[in-house]
Amino acid sequence: MSNKQLNSLFSFVKTILAILIAMVVAFIIILVVSDGPAEALYSFLVGPLTTVRRFGNLLENTIPLIFVGLGVCLLWSTGMRTLSGEGTYYFGGLFAALITIKLTAISGYGLTLTATLGVIIVCGILALLPVVVNYKYGTDAFVVSLLFNYVMFYAGNYIFTNYLMDINSTSSGSYLLPESTFLPVLIPKTNVDASLIVALVMIILTWFFMYRTKWGHRIRLIGANREHARYIGINVFRMILLAQFLGGAMSGLGGGISMFGYNTRFAWFSLTNLGWDGIMVATLARYKPQYILLSALFLGYVRTGADIMNRSSDVPSEIVMIIQAIMILFIGATAFLSGTQQKLRVRYSMRRKAETAAKEG
Image (cartoon, rainbow, N blue to C red; front, side, top):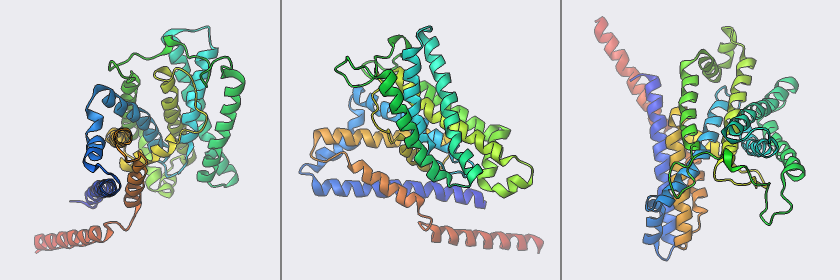
């Protein structure tokens, strides 16, 4: 086993152990605080699979997590840690609603496609701004992107208030979105629509881009060693801009496509926090697009189960926050299993030296 394979194995083991520890802690809390722990645990573990509607809720929770998780994989692929996914997801939903309501010259899926392309372009450009500021003025890209999320929110709030709000409706939110733009439902009696297919296609395309194209290879090389990439002639700034554009576009696409299904109005009165969820999903997937589906499904399953448990027992759904915090703590802890990993590296190195010496002798 090579050092690379050993590192991959330990990353996988570390993630699995973090999940198991978090789940065990959650079970202990349920046993302590609940008057009916058996019923609560059953609702938490089995509830999402008991009915078609609940399984639909699981997929509904998973779809946006796929988009924001992929967005973080792209945004962070060059080592530039930005939080643009939070603001672009919000602005993607707002901009999609704006186009579908105001652009009356087009109808049906033509309008859906037009709005989607507009969201991809606009949100991709918005994600570039924190990096441009970072390179021009030497500011911290993480902090700038965090603050810029609020700029996008307040700018979006101005657009919503002045151009989209339906003041004559008793329902808070924008004017009704055109039904002709809605994607077809895949599972009857649920809100699971064709956005699930789009999300799965995006996983494949992101993986193909990152691992089967020269641009993806350059981006990953910059993330591994920026100075080496610059030394061999890669335009680092250009590749970082490309990764940020694609990451912002991916997160914005998630917000925009949600307007073509179960959202009949745009009614987001605060940032969705899905950008932070994207970091959680990408961390569980070890920032590899091919694992995003499993990561998003797991987190969607936990959230759906927690919601069902909250409705059917005396355990609050906030327990999912404890699970997330513990998983992040152990996955992000560099010291977790580091001693065991180092011992195996030394043992492997000594064995290789012994085998080499035996061959030479």
